[in-house]
Amino acid sequence: MKRTLRSFSLIINYKTFIITALSVVSTYVCYHNGLIAKFPDMLVGVAIVFPVVFSIGSAYNRRETALQRLADFKGHAIAIYYATRDWPTDKANDIPERTRQLIKQMMLLIKDSLKSEHNAEFAQNEAKMYDIFSQLSKVVIEMRNYGVQATEVSRASQYISKMIIAFDNMKVIHNYRTPITLRTYSKVFIYIFPIIYGPYFASTFKDYSAHLEYVMPVLYSFILVSLDNIQDHLENPFDEVGEDDISIDVEGTMRVLK
Image 1 (cartoon, rainbow, N blue to C red):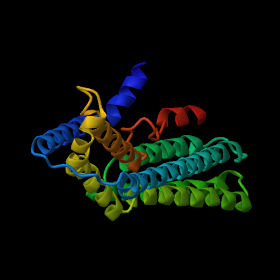
Image 2 (spheres, one colour):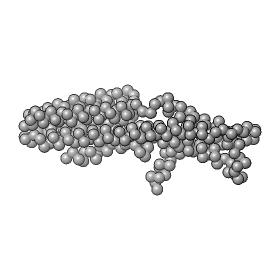
Image 3 (spheres, rainbow, N blue to C red):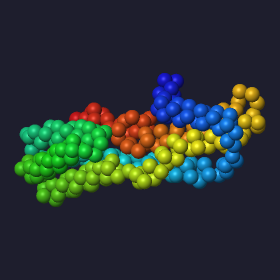
Image 4 (tube, one colour):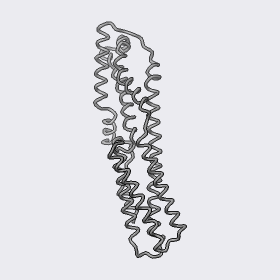
C-alpha cells in the first residue's frame, strides 16, 4: 500500500494541480463568455500522446540497456576479483584485498556520478574512475609475480577492458537522453493544451449532468501531465528518484567479494 501511494505521489504532483486548475478556469471563462468550438479529438493523440508515449518507450529501452551494461560491469569486476584470489599459486599477497577495495571505489563512484547531472563534478568523478582503472590494471600485472601465467594475466586485462566499455556505455546513457527538441515540444503542448482547449470543453457542457461539466478538463490534465511525469522519472535511470530507476547496490556486490 505504501509503495502504491509513493508511486502515485510521483506521477501526481504540483504541476498536475496547476495545469488542472488553469484548464478548469479556462473552461469556465470560455463557457460564460460564449467562446465555444468543436476541436478534433484526434489532435490530442497525434500532437501530444504519440510523442509522449514514444519518449516513454525510448527512455524505458535506455533503462533496460543500462541494466545490461551494469550487469556486465559487475560480472567482469567479480571475475577479476576471483582471478586475483584463485589464480596465483603463491597466496602470500594482498592483491585480492586491494582489488576488492578498488572495485568498491568504482561502484561508489559510478553510483555518485550517474546520480548527478553532466557537470564539472561529473567530469571529476569520471577522471577518478579512469585513474582507478589504471590502478586495477597495474594490480592485475602484479599477478605474474605470484605464479600467474602471462596468458591468464592477458585474460584478466580483457576483463578490465570490458569493464571500461560497460562504464562508457552507462556514461553515454546518462549524458545522451531523449532528444531535447522532442521533450520541449511535448512539454509545451502538454501544458498549454488543457488551457487552449477551453472552448472545446465548454462546448460539451450540455452533454453532461449537472456538476459533471468539468470532468473532461480535469481528466485530460491529469492524464497528460501524469504521462509527462512518468517520462521525466524514466529520463535518468540512475538518479534513484522514480520507482523504476536502477539501484546500484554497492554493499550487495561487496558481499559477493569474499
